[in-house]
Image (cartoon, rainbow, N blue to C red; front, side):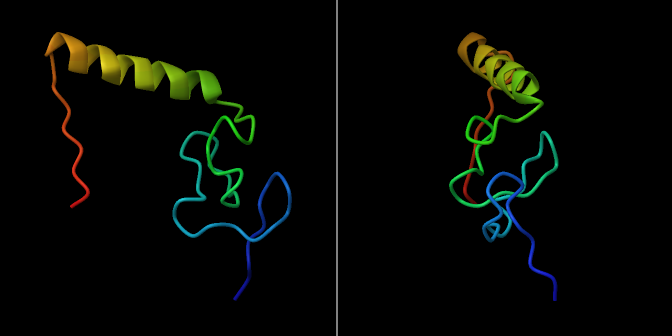
Length: 68
């Protein structure tokens, strides 16, 4: 079994939550957020969040997040 390393610091990656869906690289707990690893697609991340919040505020497509 091959252990993956954080693309930023080389430490052990965090399972599942260490995968960045914007740049598709793997990161440790410290660098898992797009802002923490200077994601090359950070602008896309911000735009997606703004769009989601806009829809929530205007009632267009209310998005409900559930942990289940």
